[in-house]
Image (tube, rainbow, N blue to C red; front, side, top):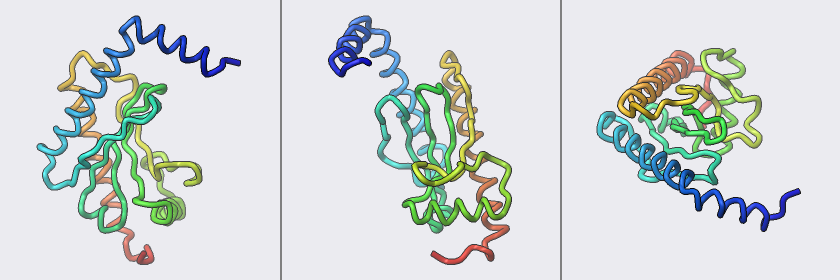
Length: 171
């Protein structure tokens, strides 16, 4: 079993090579630019001012359409580092809201996007792999793919909720 000291020596060695540092910096710059793109191209949505950088496990920011904000829901644009993909998540502002809507999607046989197994230990309700193994050669095309996927996801979720809103008990 590797000790923390062993891991830190390897971490230092990898950083000394310089590749991880440059790749991570480039990825974070891209995600900051993606957030800015959402702010400017989707002014009808509230885009978080912060990016969650994580522990090299995931990095994300949120966008919040008014229709979802009123329900205590938000959309997360997520990069999963180890899986090396971008996902779009539907999440709740807190665990109570998340559990309520998870049950709602489950009881109404939602099949359009992946419904997480349980809200226990999960940060999402629904997940959509929008770009698996992204190609960072053409950042404009990548951004377009993520934005289009996110907008479609939002429309699908909004439509489902508005079509079924009479069935949801108030918070």
